[in-house]
Image (cartoon, rainbow, N blue to C red; front, side, top):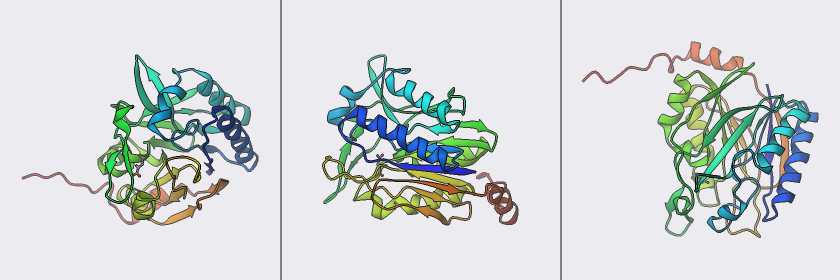
Length: 266
Ligand SMILES: NC(=O)CC(=O)C(=O)O
């Protein structure tokens, strides 16, 4: 399976962000991608001050254009995430489309990014967003794929449950920053991959020093063996990476963890 990592540099111009996403999805498809993944909040700066103004209802302009990007290029598209308005509440929501442009999955970030790190980043997503309440997997011809958004990666039970739902790979539109990125980005992606013996795909925005939030970039793929298959740098880039999904069964057979879990019987 070929995965297109779109490490887009997000600006405060929504149309520019969307046009760039369209261009990069096309480039990834021309390079053979089966699935293309965009970053968290890719059409809007990652900043509470912007979320409400940039928000759209489901089936709005961004949803329509994502669906067309998938069908025009005949790829699965994990459309990062965008601020979505639903019954007066805002959610950090991502949509997944199949090769025909039909929506096959929706995920609203369950664990909101509310942190205050001394000498580092302070961000309170819950000042604007409400949390999602469900997570799950979607079907492809390659197997079942799970999805979470950024801070969700830190809650290991979410990924364990997706593995139990049959996931052989999980995708994570994300936006770590210059405090949490160097400390935890690679570690959490390697950890979740190893815990569940599956592939993990994380895609973040490129760093943009003109914005208030300095994203870490470093879009990454980790293997069921816990290794880094590929990792980008800080800059804007599109890269297509070939992964061998047969490794999931091979490693689960050779080093059985996922099918050997035991309950606490005490
Ligand atoms: N955008 C985020 O949710 C950031 C995050 O998860 C982090 O740990 O950094």
